[in-house]
Image (cartoon, rainbow, N blue to C red; front, side):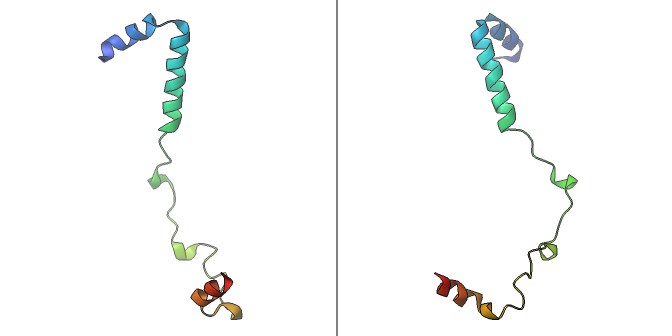
Length: 72
């Protein structure tokens, strides 16, 4: 379908079909909405995250692999 015929084809549809086309376009716009550009977000290094080191100094988890195995 050529773009120059698109509006004519749309206008030839009955009103209910036109509404379905508009609903489908809205769906596609929501689905393919561009995400927030990465360059607008400030890069955070993993080691600066608050959760890093929260278990530091725990006596019961010296060997984390063993601790998880025992937990299972």
